[in-house]
Structures are given as C-alpha cells and as structure tokens.
Length: 113
Image (cartoon, rainbow, N blue to C red; front, side, top):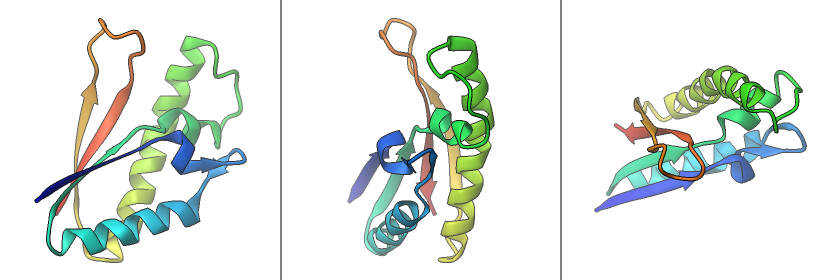
C-alpha cells in the first residue's frame, strides 16, 4: 500500500523553533509504516524553518522567499539525520504548484527507501 503523509509548519515548528520532538515522532512513525508500506512524505514548512535562523517579516514576499531558501536545507538535513538512524535514505523531489492557484507553495516530496 502507498501512504502519503503531508506535514507543514503547524507540525514542524513550535514557539519559533523546529519542533524536534514532533519531527522525531514523525520519523519514528514513518519508519514503522515503511516496514509494510510504500511511504511518501510531503513536507512544506521551509519558511518557518528559515525563520528559526533569521527573524524577518514573513508577510513580505521577498522575505518569505529568502526564508524558504534558508529553511529548505535546514529541514532536509534534519530529516536526513533522523532517518539515517533507521538506515533510511530519502529521495527528494521538489514540487512547485502552478501559478493558477492562489497560494504558490514549494513542497519537498521524500520517497522513503
């Protein structure tokens, strides 16, 4: 069975920091699911992750883009380290929603190997 899990800022951040305990619980859960399923993790939250490193106004588009650029590798590195504890390799693919949608977001899709 294929299972798709989508997480974002509400799950990945808390009080201006990355919610490491929640992220670890998510990784633990996915590692358990992976034993009998194909699992895809769809993750947004790069802006919030970037905000943990640089506190600038998130309502300004240019700032939001800068925060996403800072936060994306932060999230990827955190995920990679946590999944490495289970000897799980992440395959990453960026997904940009079309401009016809009101809110453009960049998601990272991880295939759990």
